[in-house]
Picture 1 (cartoon, helix red, strand yellow):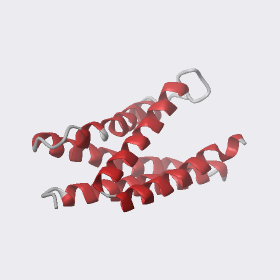
Picture 2: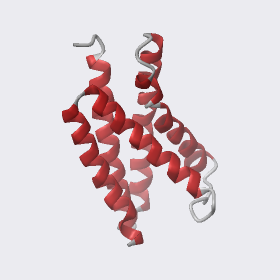
Picture 3: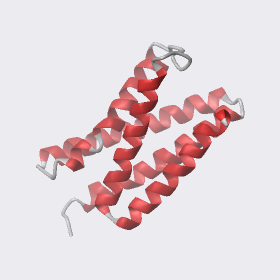
Picture 4: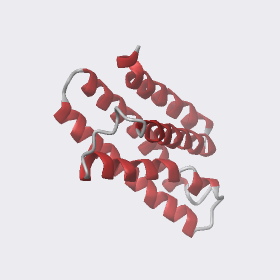
Length: 143
């Protein structure tokens, strides 16, 4: 058993909470509740930033590089989101710039799934399930 079980467990719990909060955010978007969507976005962002600290701890302790690398895309996504949605408040989602943004979102979530499977198969399956709930609500308005 690793000395880093606490860090890893926190990461996989946060990964699943991010998926659930983002699913609720997309439900708020579908329901036309922009204030709730805004708050849930901030909640998810703060959780994402805590994953940056986990990546720092993993790197500092010279763990397998994947325990750091798999967290970086989601951290980068939330940094970009902070600037685009909360600091500059740009309406970029109806432009070509939405494509790399959405791609970074997916890559970040896939990194969390990978991290969860590295921690344990059970947590990997749970994270995959919450990811699909998140994805279902994110694409629902477009089908």
